[in-house]
Length: 571
Ligand code: ADP
Ligand code: ASP
Ligand code: MG
Image (cartoon, rainbow, N blue to C red; front, side, top):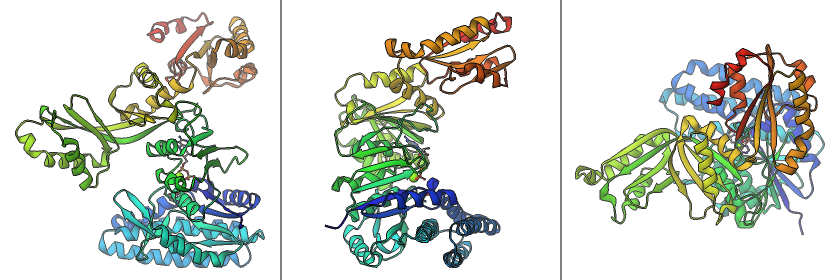
């Protein structure tokens, strides 16, 4: 029996500069057993820059030359650094030809004053092609047989209402024909790009290389698919917002799909579908820390934590349709969502009160006005007759979603969610829970989204006994107290589940603020190096972090100025 394929995927952040390409080559050449394919994204930021060329060609053609030069310099530098011999000049020649093609497309766009979608797909997909050529060349130079394959020649898709649909039969046939030319090679495949049935270049949409990886995983009947990115795996919350976020070791396909759909950008929401059918496990790993095990996404029924992760989608609008005329009238929802579907507006979340007096739903903010127009048209008669009072829109909303298979049938999850939001003073505008009970989502004000995410994350992941501590005056008494806390911390955590986090120390002139906690074993050294000038307002705010359930400020300073802040801190 032939050995099975492993399909890897490397995102733009894992392919930012020459060092990153070398690291990726090392992962690939070091982990080869069986047949191995790697789907690659464009180098970091290149897709954005290619897309901006199209905008510039319409609005500011004079700025095109500099942007093209920037893209050229980036790739030529990479080629000089990574490819030698004949491979380097050959790469630069092919790259130059592509730039000429792009230049002629841009010229046409300039004349038309608009960029048709086909032009956008063609131009924006070059980043993946340049990246694949580069990585394949680099690996070949290291003596490992390597070839690259342009997904524009093999992956046939159709752009449908709900996104790209793969023509499996045609793609499989094309892939098999192409594979005959690539025996025994480590195969590099372009992510993101595809073709239509008529052979016109198209794409799987932004962030679509993850989806490419799972499609090729399925086409090649891979044993596993590994998505390499720049974080240690799928995390319990967006690590850019939640410092305490932890890697989730295991997810089911459904959990991963839900997290991706509700905003965890680390995986494209389409990724899981092609894998589910064949039961191919998916790993999310860090190309910068390959020693970390990452997240494993596989079939199953959601063991472990009840709540696996918390996500946020920003830039949403909440549309509310209200009126006594909807009570007991069958088919209202059908008419409403049918009209929206016809207008091509996707509804992210729906909530209807049991009185049927109102229905509200969330749509991307950019579709808010057209959603309102569609609804007004669909219910014009009822509005005229006063059965429906109106269509309200709230812009700048966010949807916060709590996801986990294990929430099913477990009481109290919703209570923890709303408690955490309530304590953080976040107003909830609408709520939805799917019948699968895998997800509870809440619509909140956009300005409160980061605060809400931190508060809810701490509600589920921190112990209710986590205490943020700030100490003023680390002299004799204060210093001994810090030593005592350092000595007792582990015992208190083990015996009493008390998680004491000294996060701020200040004297009359300076202060030291730590994000998670200040390492207390060597606190005197940290403190000796602290040079931030004292700012009592900032000190107070830092200690009373909204993501930690409790805060304590200990004053060992005997300072009038500090005492002057007591009332405000207690308030
Ligand atoms: P790539 O270029 O590898 O496709 P992306 O930028 O598309 O990488 O996705 C990785 C990023 O997703 C991370 O750097 C992280 O900031 C962000 N992210 C958002 N939510 C999560 C989450 N729940 N877990 C992990 N990463 C997340
Ligand atoms: N390069 C494409 C993008 O930036 C696809 C991807 O990286 O997944 O959207
Ligand atoms: Mg991505």
